[in-house]
Amino acid sequence: MAGSLRTGIWRIGKIEAPLPEYMTSGAAGVDLCAAIAQPLEISPRERVLVSTGLGVAVPPGFEGQVRPRSGLAVRSGITVLNSPGTIDSDYRGELRVALVNLGGESVMIEPLERIAQLVVTPVVQVVWDLLRTGADDLPIGETTERGAGGFGHTGRKTDRIPD
Image 1 (cartoon, rainbow, N blue to C red):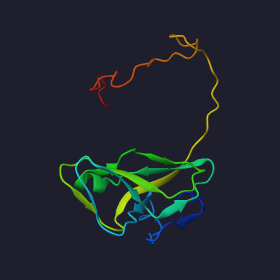
Image 2: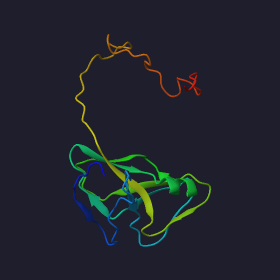
Image 3: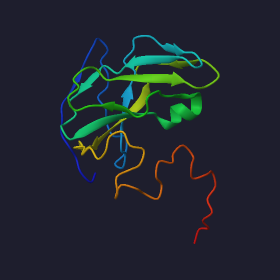
Image 4: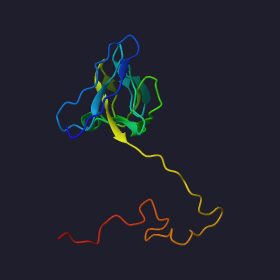
């Protein structure tokens, strides 16, 4: 692995959740498991908050990102609702995962099933300089080619031909 970081992790609750581990040498994330005693049925379009039975000490200057597991999403339509979910470095509670069933059928989550992945990544905190208040135009030097265009303003197809 290119770099590593040591930090604390602890179990929370009565279910002995497995500690996260990287499944391959190139893996970016570790799997989080459902720390539940009984299978959990998630109906179509239903949202649930699932315990992982773990707490982590994300180091200052980093965040934990809770992301979907691609296989679970493709097979059953189960994904992380607020993806990526953010775990701040000063949070010390249990990691819980907001899952949603986007599929057309109910899905059973089994005890200790891998339900999401956790990626720890560096972050920076920005110091904002107020440039202008209450004006529709941007201060000189703050305009860009894109401007305020968003939500599909560049179209659906490219005019560029690959080399």
